[in-house]
Length: 236
Image 1 (cartoon, one colour):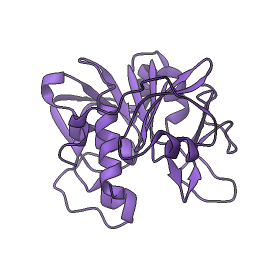
Image 2 (cartoon, one colour):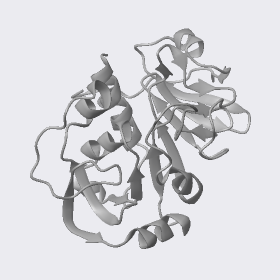
Image 3 (spheres, rainbow, N blue to C red):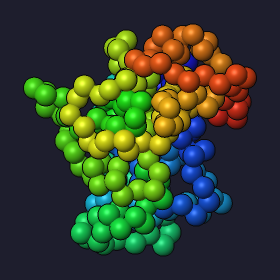
């Protein structure tokens, strides 16, 4: 898979973690793509911490914006998501101020959040808001979402420049300690357990040995661990 296909695979597989009727918050970058793989029959509502429930698909080229850093495509949309990206809205969407929006997050009403990250460790601690000495986007709502959402899914490339993003311990400043429940990368799905990170399923384009070598901590690999179902590779 090329990088675009990897991003779409990660997002599509992350969509499989959502249940019918969930209220879901999507982070910027790859997580924004998740909405492309959620049909209306699932009755999933997308929440934006800038004050909206009922976000639809991104109305700009997420892949181009995220990977190639190109200019977003033109759009007639006048609505933005919490990452300031143009977005569609669904019929019946509601708008409110950000204090109400964060009240929903802090009150535990968000069922799932899907977030990108710079690092995540075997305890589920997440570092996704700053690199000392570099100018990056900042915290946004990630701290509140890590603590307030019922389930935290990390959707990210497995490595960055060949360096593992999944580590024994995060080295960057933490967004939240012990927050993540699931990690999804182009290499597979990984659950955070009391004993460490366990592979739930893996992408058959990689071997288990390759996956372990690309990870900065020891993985728990159950006997007979399955590969990712083929439907998640369709249409990438």
